[in-house]
Length: 220
Ligand SMILES: *Cc1c(COP(=O)(O)O)cnc(C)c1O
Image (cartoon, rainbow, N blue to C red; front, side, top):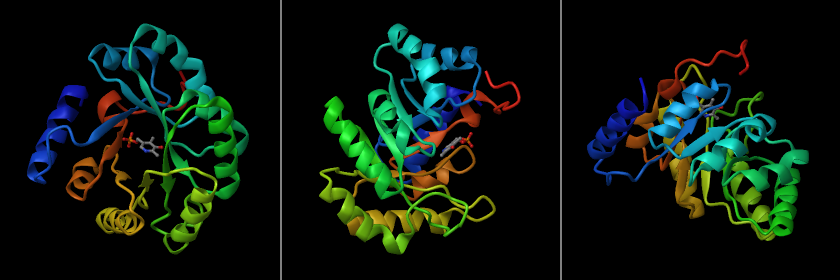
């Protein structure tokens, strides 16, 4: 547990996969975590954080950004279209582009605010009805429509089904990205980030292994 330990495990996984040290970007997922835990990790030098809820992020991060230089925020949760503009104003990357209505709102917000955001398309690799994401067989057509809006997605993101071996999902995401000429792969969480690194993740989203378990009942 803790940031140092996670970093050591990332370096070891990079080395084991023959990948350069530091080639994997660690997104520390701070959703729902108490302020003192996040501040401790900021004090240790971590600057890239992930949040799931626009309003929660908006309540917490302006103050931390004024105290700590160089913070980058990644939106990793489902994004409502009516929050697209707020999200573009606050986040440096959005991992959950999953429908055209959202793509259109993001395109407008990016143009209006004149602010870039790295975009990842979420892919529903497990074809789970309750889960967000573009189905693998619909990805090509979706990307074509998104690019027609002048958006340039840079990568793909997935959340494998909870009860399954994540490896086939990570491999599918990598294959899809290669076929589409996308370089970034957002995959791997606390339970499987080393596996994801072995399979080519460029961005891992790690929450509880850094901060400890989330207590949703306390809700900061
Ligand atoms: C909460 C969350 C994470 C972090 O999960 P942990 O298991 O705590 O590492 C990663 N990705 C997404 C999309 C999440 O919602």
